[in-house]
Length: 447
Figure 1 (spheres, rainbow, N blue to C red):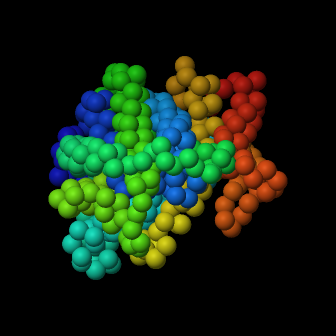
Figure 2 (cartoon, helix red, strand yellow):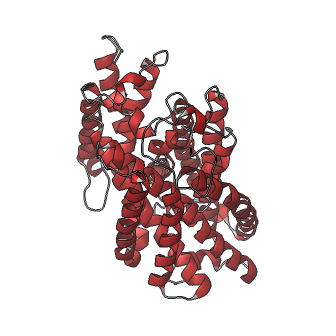
């Protein structure tokens, strides 16, 4: 039996959690979602809002808070739903998308978490460790990746324990760092020239960052005992996510008003504003925070991959898949060391492009089925729900084709109306939600 054992490899894969193995309290979700966001990737998004999107500090603060609030609210709602069936978030998605229709979002989730986010956070952790120790950057990357994969290999209980014990360290160090940064910042001197477009770009990037955790939500509530308060679960998960992302993004935005150095290492630029002792502690915390994020990334990526219907005759199949994603993430992180800033900006916006439509379908379906039981269809390969994948694709194709605002592709709407920025995620969410609601509502909502 797995139970509450911490240093034991979690057996199996995506099967419902047995009653005998359920444990924990809702409050643990607060640090589960706070710790992984107390890291440099969060700070750097705040820096981008001022330096790349052209906003003043107060404009950036409003945009970032709005994006984070939307993503965190959705996260709380999805986390609360994970209690009932004891399965990961991507398995729950089968009811809205059908067993095989769910392959599309599960694939996107696997790539986003196991490749994209794992690489992004590994790079930020490696830069911080390099700044702290002056060890070769590639060696720093290898150390960070190895530690992350080992924790994810053991599974749920060790992941939760790591987040719990990382939380007080990260919270104290970043609280002190925030005080120092805000004391040196000049928020009133940064009026900004980004306009409405810059505002929407920043809000979209913040939403992409925070809502990027939404497809993980039930992965970390499925072990909670039956009968746990759904409201407490939602509040703990959503508030932890919102607080961590918003505070650190505002710290990053404030640091961009101080004036920086010419270093190629973004972690060095940020900590250059701090006293030597605090800079060292912050670099150590940046490394620890990136690991806190990535143990969730590689763990949930493995669960999403198994949701594709892959059959591995191994007792430790989830653990083996986690190691595979660790190797892929290491290679991608290595290749991305040279252009981390630009790659991060583009990645955040692309995340929102599919998360928005996916959320539209998922939340509407959750509302329609709020009084239903549907556990019997989650492992039924014959279950079909064409409305889900059709609505998802409609939202993605129309919103990306018309509204995407990227360096490599700009849709006709932002071309014609430059000030509109990037509202792809909002348009995608609305289109997918409406298509799914119209398709499913008149008919019987039963699976």
